[in-house]
Length: 67
Image (cartoon, rainbow, N blue to C red; front, side, top):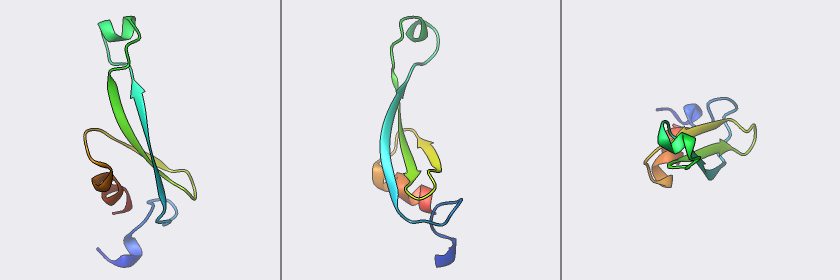
């Protein structure tokens, strides 16, 4: 991959923020409002473009987001 192809897919910025969100699954967990699914959110600090990742470490997530 060339250096000019790295960065945010929308604006090319290379700075990110990582947050975590929890969501409710289906069935019984939805009825009882149990938030049993966790996702990491990697967001561009410039334009706000975000991607969700499940089950990966933060280092791997940044590499996937930035290319």
